[in-house]
Image (cartoon, rainbow, N blue to C red):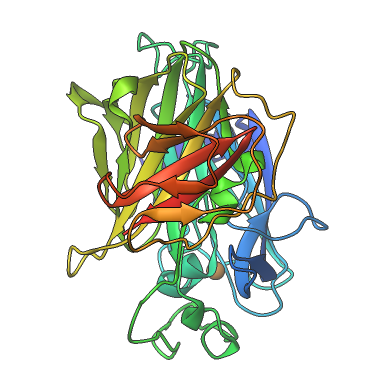
Amino acid sequence: MIKLTLSVLLVLISLDCLTQIDYSKLIIGRNTGTKTLHDGNVTKIFGFTETLNEVTDTPGPTIRVTEGDTIQIEFWNVSQGAPHTIHLHGLDVNQENDGVPHLSFVVNHMDHGYYKFKAPHPGTYIYHCHVVSTIHVQAGMYGVIIVEPSNGQNNTTWVGGESFDRDILLTASEIDTNWHTDAVLDHEHDPVNPIPVFVPENYTPQYFLVNGLSETQLADPLNHSTVGVNEDVFMRLVNIGYYGVRYIFPNSVNARTISSDGRPLPQAYINDTIEVLPGERYGTLIQTGTADFYDVEIEYFNMNTQLIESSQAVTLRTSLASINNLELNLTVYPNPSEDGVFYTEKAFTENYTIYAIDGGLVLKSSEQRIDLSKHKPGIYTMHYQGSVIKLCAQ
Ligand SMILES: [Cu+2]
């Protein structure tokens, strides 16, 4: 009996070794990155890259795989010290490949390891380092894994699900630069007993990011997401920060949330506002019309106080909006404005347009005095010849 069990086991092991890898991906962990923030400040970061000579940025590369495929992530640690792992957040992988240090394995500096798993349900997932994860995630070691359906139709939500024309990934996170100092990041981390690592008492982020960008970086036309006219767009809404976020869509795009954490919702959630807590992912279908731009607002709220501490805007630009005349010299002051009146030295040769965050047209003018005083306080976007800036009326 024992003999039989042993031979079955051996067969199983050898079968496992022979399992065909459908998709293999190299990911490199580094702790020597720097990131330029919207105000020009530069902060130290950790991150994941696909090649050795790539600039380390955060989020890391988006990995796209197909449902049912056997995936192998080869992970190199080229990080001058700390061990790292890849934790596959939300994916049903076995413990050995889960990247939780004490249950799995860590990859030390100049070493490498393999994570192997079968891509589960189509959906949006997160990968991140799980060594002293409070610090290493904040440091920037995170990215997104998208599992596409197995029917070969990449533009469907799942087999038998809904089809769309394109998908757009929005990943929210924050940076508290007080956590990005040598004192916090430069540790020979002990993977078995991570307690000695210094974790700052307070988390008070100064930068609230979407896809690693904030404020003027998001307003830069080069960082807009492109959408078509009259398209169905599948928005993959992710939160890998420590704040809660709300993605707020213009009413005109009929936001309909159909999936959560890699699973279809029993019933679609019809609401312009989708709250995404740390680690969560939602799938929301929207429909574009014939406007030039659609702005998505992202609110960041403190999980303890529930207070909104930042608001960012992402612009979806349709093909109708020309980007031939990138006018990057457009400056408006004061911004924020206390009375809702702004000025610019720019001499306009045609009208600019100003939209409220809900997508409504507020003003069309060529005047250098921009008067939003009769409108309610909030964020507006000003569009002129392909250039977009964010106006904040208080
Ligand atoms: Cu790490």
